[in-house]
Length: 169
Image 1: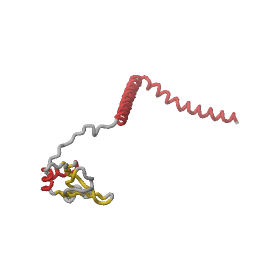
Image 2: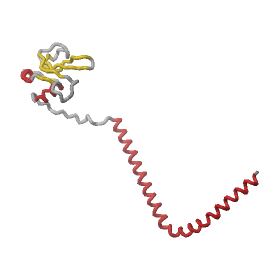
Image 3: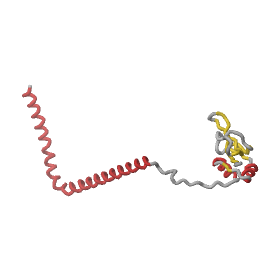
Image 4: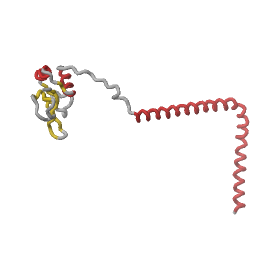
């Protein structure tokens, strides 16, 4: 007969309470068991001493006669220092799926295009800033003259539309 150390569920709906039991591996989860060796109340805080209660002597006895603990019970036994649990390694657990990889590649491509566009705009701005700086001294003198002439031209432009309005009436 294969013996398993496992959890047997009790409690109400959405209020779980488990017994840690030694049972025949072929019996139902909440069915007949050989011996209750502890309790587990997941509703209590993780640092509570009442969360997991375990009879260590009986757990050692059942492990000694060949009982195989479930994953969760093995965690409890490891925390109690009764049986060491080997660390598991799943390298693909944190790896994104195919669709997420495609989205990441598209996003990286858009970012690269935006950086290239920003560099091109920056270079154009530098080129535009350098070109007028070389020609600026030659253009400053005519700019001052045109600034003096501009008010006279504006006054003439204002008078001309006024005359046109009168003729249209």
